[in-house]
Image 1 (cartoon, rainbow, N blue to C red):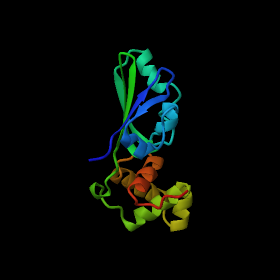
Image 2 (image 1 turned 30 degrees about the vertical axis):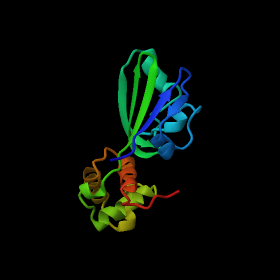
Image 3 (image 1 turned 120 degrees about the horizontal axis):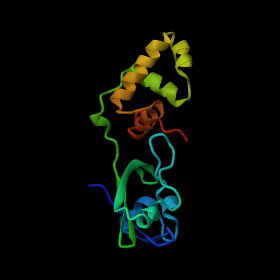
Length: 168
């Protein structure tokens, strides 16, 4: 069972309390703004968390919302909720299990590695000596196998599952 980090956010958007799991997953967080602590990003790499996002829940009377993405704790489900002025953020790590994914062929791994390096479809086709349509077929199959909507999401998922080396 994964550790569940629980944060209580004050009226200024700062972490007022963090449980032991939060300290283990996210480090020392008290007094920091929630979005700086969680740093949740979508599959496209764009931030989901932003200054004041947890407080928007309280201010607009919303009971809560759940988002999935990559944060400081790794791949996670982040649940933000507000009840009677108390804003809580729960971070549940959700590693992507590689064993539940249909294996990529050696060629698909090669293509995905080139995508991760920033090559275009045309460049990949030229390097591999295949038609651009063949490259696009490989990419479609990769996205299907990795349950990804885009090239970037496929690369991110592959890195999270250890199918590609994590650069940087």
